[in-house]
Each structure stands twice: as structure tokens, then as C-alpha cells.
Length: 298
Ligand code: HMG
Ligand code: MG
Image (cartoon, rainbow, N blue to C red; front, side, top):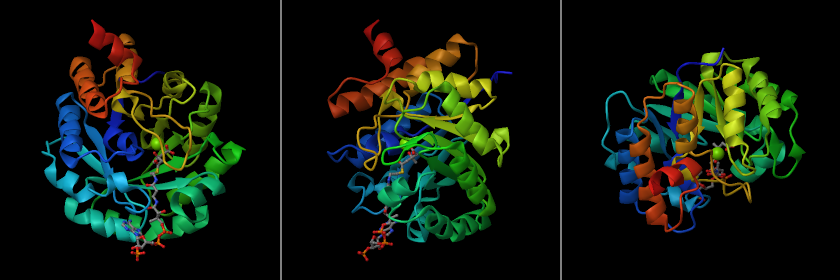
């Protein structure tokens, strides 16, 4: 049955902004987080503790984490690629860390400069240390449908990666269509692959909208009972190591769909649209959210 409640994680401040060429000041990122929580988001992916040589936009990670006004009941998560990133993140007191691996070897090399197996080896001590401190651990699985270097990715590769994540103690996995080539049945296969190792409550969808399929893919995931999704306000985003990929599915578009279906999100769509306009205005370009644009025009 289709879930009657959905949890959205807004990844706009992290996935959304990491690809911006021009440095966005920390105050603007903090302002975005503030507006997202005011709109009712209960989980926000704030930043990443990755190498500033690799992703300069996230170099202000600690400053952003220190500047946000924490609300009870909101979970603030950060990406960490290795022990160095985890140790750098700790003073910021993240509620959750996200380790990230790829279902395809070439993307693993391009994104984190190591093999899939090597990345799992790197994550194992990070996961152990985080869990020992009571920090929740999510695992992002990239390229679960297609890879920018290898083309189609077989569900078996996703099964394998999810199994490795499980083995090292990752508590939840996100099934990512990094380059947005997925269509509903393919995305369902990728999710089913993750569900071989994880319970329904521990699997989420992370769909980029490059080919305009992400809302359809979200509905396809709902049909499987998946009820947690990463989305990005104003449809911001992309990955510097996945050339041509556009942003995540816009949070506004997903909330509009869910509202229309009577599925609860706890998010105030008008306030969310304001958050989208705030960051789009700063970046000086129109929002990528269709619903956000339509609502703002009224
Ligand atoms: P490397 O160059 O192989 O790392 O990069 P290294 O261990 O050899 O270290 C090289 C230098 O980086 C050293 O500095 C380290 O100290 C430093 P030096 O001694 O030369 O001065 N370093 C760090 N500095 C700060 N924070 C760190 C860190 N680690 C090493 N954590 C590494 C390997 C993983 C670090 C690098 O490849 C990296 O940072 N990659 C991150 C790329 C990234 O952020 N991609 C985007 C996020 S993933 C994504 O968007 C996908 C997702 O949305 C899901 C989807 O859509 O698919 C999640
Ligand atoms: Mg992504």
C-alpha cells in the first residue's frame, strides 16, 4: 500500500550547493537551513566534510554547522568520506553522518578516488566510531541505475553494495540515481536490490531529475512502500563528478504531489516556496521547481 506519511530530507544546502562554481557565503547557507526548518523540514543535509581541494564550496562546513540555529526534533546530517572527515565533523555535533559509495567502479574512482572495496574499508572505522557515539549512520549509494562512465548499472551491483554497507553497520541506505537516467521500473529494481539487505524503513530514494523522471520515480518508489526521500529545494544540485547531471528532484514538486495525494509530510508548501525563492534569488537564476515557480507566480 502507498504510505500515508512521508519523510523528506532536504539535501539542498549540501547536494544542492556543492556544484555551484561561485562560493556561496556561509550566512546564505545558514539562511537557507533556517528557512527549510521554518517550512517544516525535519531533516536537513547541511554540508559535507570532504576535501576542500575536491569540493571548495563545502570548505565552510564547520562555520555553517556552527551558525545554524538548532531546533529540537530536526536532524542535521553531514557527509563524511573518511576518518579525517569524521573527526573534522565531530565538533559540529551532527545528528547523522552520511558515508557515500558507488555501485559502479568508475564513479567510485572519480568521486572519492578509490575502489568500491577500498571505500568500504575506509568507511568501516568511521561507521564504528559514529555508532559508538550514538550518531546515526546513513549510506548513500550512487549510480544505482546508471553511471556517467559505464552506462547501465545492473541491480546485482546494488545488491552487492547494499550487502557491504550492511556488513559494516550502516543503518540506512539511500538509493541514488546520480545522473537521473532512471525510469520508474528501473528505479524500483534498484530499490528492491537495496531491500534485499535493508528493511523498508531503512531505505530511501535520492533521485536526480536530469531527464525529468524524478517525480515519476518517486511515485514508483512509493508504490513499493518506500516513504523516505532526499529532495532539494528549488531543484538545486548536481555532483561535480557526474558531468551534466542536474539537481535533485525539487522538494516543492514532491510536496505538491504528496499534498495532492493526501500524504502527510509536515511541510508548509508556501514557506518552502519562499525558501526556494530565497536561494534562487541569491544565485540569480530561476528556481528549477515547476511547482515552486507556479505557486510564486500566483
Ligand atoms: P584523496 O586525494 O585520495 O585523499 O581524496 P587523501 O587521503 O590522499 O588525502 C589528500 C589530501 O586531502 C590530504 O591533504 C588530506 O589531508 C586531505 P594534504 O596532506 O595533501 O594537505 N583530506 C581531507 N581534507 C579535508 N577533509 C577530508 C579529507 N580527506 C583527505 N575529509 C577524498 C579522497 C575522499 C578525500 C576526496 O576524493 C573527496 O573529498 N571526495 C569527495 C567528493 C565529493 O564530495 N563528491 C560529492 C558528494 S557525493 C554525491 O554528491 C552523491 C550523492 O548525492 C548521492 C548521489 O546523487 O549519487 C551523495
Ligand atoms: Mg546526489
